[in-house]
Image 1 (cartoon, rainbow, N blue to C red):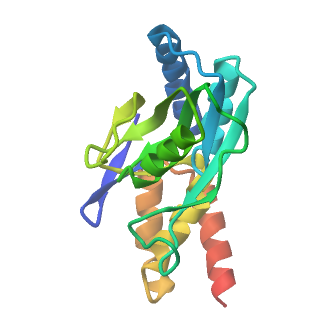
Image 2 (cartoon, rainbow, N blue to C red; image 1 turned 180 degrees about the vertical axis):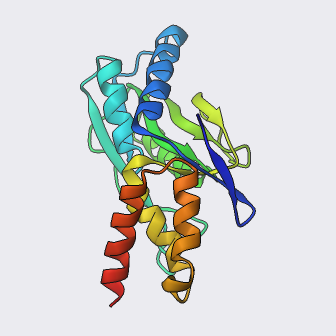
Length: 204
């Protein structure tokens, strides 16, 4: 079951490893049925790396490479405009390319990545994500769920917990309340407590 609660006007949802794998199984089948046969699969670092690796396996395609787009305020971009910090690591000239990420939020990063790969000479670029937000400027050819939620993936759980508690000046005042929220949406309690302990220890 997909459990959600309200977090500052936003739904919070935890996606388990099994749920993610089920979504990717379905997505791989949809990609095959669409007739699209990518020569290269590109995982967008960091969130798209694990889904891309799984799709590489499910689609029987070992040609997996990476690309990185990041936000650097005050650099070549700003908080709303991503910068390509790692170009696609394999020649894609005249090839069909599948770009994989875990979610498309604003769409700015994936738009940049798609433009980059097309400029490298790719014959066709399609996007696959697990989740899609309607506010995005880019709609993936393949996505499994449309959402307005803040999705917690199993590979970024500690980072997400840290982000939530970094919003608070005093972590001690909100530990019990926020711990209950994470557990309520299905996050394993022992992991929440472990990561909270590490975060608190790091602040001392």
